[in-house]
Length: 354
Picture 1 (cartoon, rainbow, N blue to C red):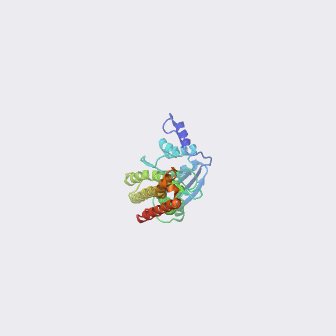
Picture 2 (cartoon, rainbow, N blue to C red; picture 1 turned 90 degrees about the vertical axis):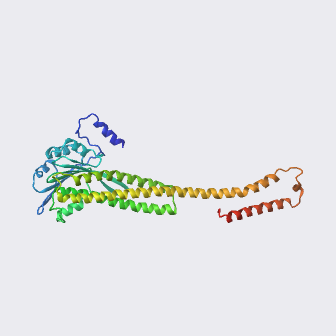
């Protein structure tokens, strides 16, 4: 977090639209891939220079330009200048801490989303900012690093499966958003399995490590909620947008993604409630265990109170105590103490105190 704060400090006092990368330092080379297609034509290529993307702006076919690596300010600036992207939009693209949002600029629509994925080896959930610029016949996607969840979309384009090759750039943008939202369900399924395992452990043998796991899961759900909650506003805005870039036939698909987002939010809230309940169960379990221990100790102490009283009296050793000179006095006192102890244990058992 301090790293990002230092990055923000560099922007203080600079003019709006100044491009400064806010995010993890990266040294990888920016990778640019282009997919150009229509119903009968498909072309996929990787380019080394950003200028090679420029001829696709005015082509009648649909073009998807994917840029991996927003840390290269020169590439982002060149793309923005040629495609007529506002400097404030470019500033949001290189700021990887941006909140999900949607802005309609008339000749293009700008959308910011959070792509979340689970790293099994590290057992952590990571997020990556994805920015989309949707124009009349192109979609430009910006990602922090190479690698994403869009491979299935690329396969559909290559194989001409479904209606994606028959639709426009707005449908491509919908498909990318839908893939991101659907992946949230995969993350929720993974978290759900972990919650079930913790619930079983909580009912059998709760330990302090279980509490740590519960807190870690709550952090993951809060992280997921921060990514999903603003997305509802984004998709609602796209569904109700009167922009000519979104065709009427595509709005129903955005409504479907909006419904999926609501389902994800409901699932996140349900999981959060379950974790809160599990934490209460753990605290109650620990409290009950402590109560059982205290009850046993209290019963033991209660049994020994009259025995200690008797031992205290006969431990005073006054000269004229009548029982001191009695031959069977010691055995009689021990017998009385034994009878008192057994009687109290029997009484406690009848009362079902243990």
